[in-house]
Image 1 (tube, rainbow, N blue to C red):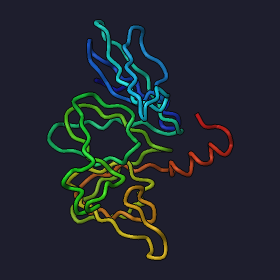
Image 2 (image 1 turned 90 degrees about the horizontal axis):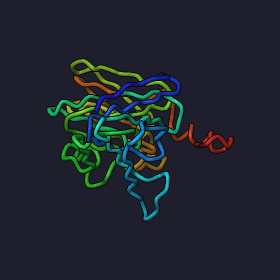
Image 3 (image 1 turned 180 degrees about the horizontal axis):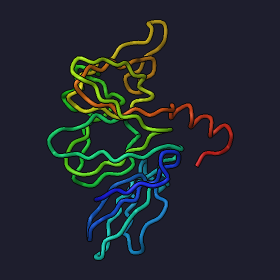
Image 4 (image 1 turned 45 degrees about the vertical axis):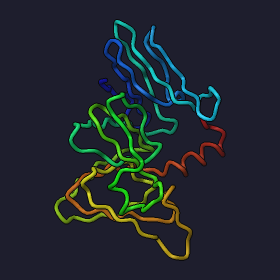
Length: 215
């Protein structure tokens, strides 16, 4: 799969270019259009074939394309996985991935971060292009050896698996959740790379819903 982006950074769209017979997985709700002949297999969540379902798009004999876009305004970014090093990606930010990319929410590297809980980040590895979305613009932060940064989980998109990460409470007086990142902060130490979005997706979604502009 190859990814071509357009309308970035404000209203990003990713065109997924598929070879003959190649398949890609994406949320059905993110699909804008496909080339003619694309096979769409909607895999329901919770027993209903709704637009919230996951879909597998398979290209016909001549190949084809799928256009996908996030629900919220912002950038789209292609994370190239090399089969050697993985990334830790916030749940809900990825747009599309080929079958050669796999996710593991129980990756061993999360034990020191989340303990026995399922956290708000999942490990992604394999080979190929992972299309992810940002609310607002996307910043790429490269940390040098021993360089430190603190990030609110609401703005985190991804970080390279070898980046050191520590989770701590903002304050003992507010509730915390490792499943959502609520009430928590992430401390990172380099070397490593982070992808950060410039807007809070939950706040933006709530504002759009209140104004009647949800997708």
